[in-house]
Length: 202
Image 1 (cartoon, rainbow, N blue to C red):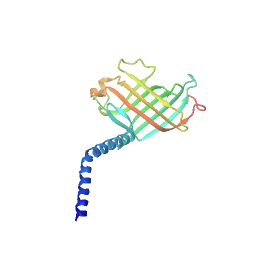
Image 2: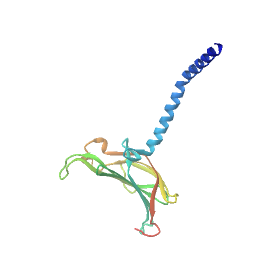
Image 3: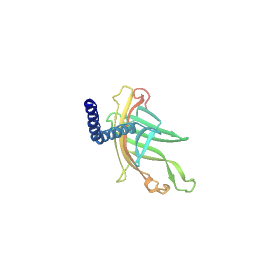
Image 4: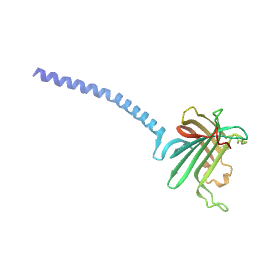
């Protein structure tokens, strides 16, 4: 009888202890789940591999490639990285051009679908629209870009970038928030590339 009472008391004590620890345990689990979710979100989405945010929205790619070339006229070595998103027969792209010597971002080109106004000779509606910014451009006061590339990998490239790009023909863009692109948190790694800098020159 005494043994039974002792066992009951032990179970009661353990249950109370577990109940007290539950909030802390739950909080830790939630934090860990959030961390896991964040790590997964950094890598993949339902539309491919996450590359960056474009005007605050995730932009993912389904194809990535790189190439390093040398301009025979300027003797400049350029690393070009291209990301493509192919979904529902529509293709969007982000193309980054880095100086392979200084490792700094020189040019950026982004082609995405945005809603355009109907205009002479133009159908309007959702149209593929290209935003570009080059280091040699005379930039508007709000435009900027920055980024670096790592070419030390044996067969792969990694890097980052951020940019603010104005669309020059603003009268074609229907929604004001699409007149300016904010490219943020752009990061990539393990992108395979071809090095033609010692052979084919442009």
